Image 1 (cartoon, rainbow, N blue to C red):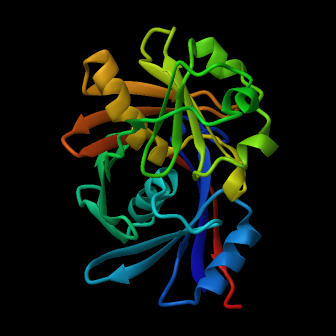
Image 2: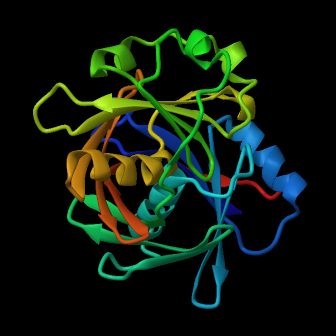
Length: 261
């Protein structure tokens, strides 16, 4: 049997933030098996952990992606909570995006991810109509289209046409604006219907693009972002050269065992 947990990542309380399943595997399984279990879990992402040269191999499925922040944060939480790592020990993950690390900082988990700063791009035809809002600035990061809107309230109140957004040639569409509330620097939402995620609750990898963008706009390297989805979540961010530190909290909501099927 393998341990199988569900963890709410970037969450201050249960049933908030972004849930991810975390499965600890004793060895290799084929991609089709990973995909089938991930579909069974019915989460945006399921993280699969294996031992790897004293560190940890980490893969994400449903869909298989190159970079996933909330499932990495959930995986680090799992390792520390299950006693596989001491909280004073850095969690080191070997992934499709290279080596990713996580450190414990009190109640916070700090991820070290690659920055994916966006470059300005010509707005896509039909994007404003699909969003139901006029972009102030449009860019492209390694994975996504980034759209800056005129106000935080516009971001919060969006009801985009997801069928139209699914035609955008990118993993997803990040919408963002400067915050209008104390203690928060910027707000965002993330829509990825093209890969089967209509709206992601809190997206760590999107903040790899948001951090360098807002650091340039606001003139600050350390900031706090709020992803304004219905579940919502806070992400502390810091730009460090070509890397981004993403900090959030996590809560375990389910612990169980996967029967050997």
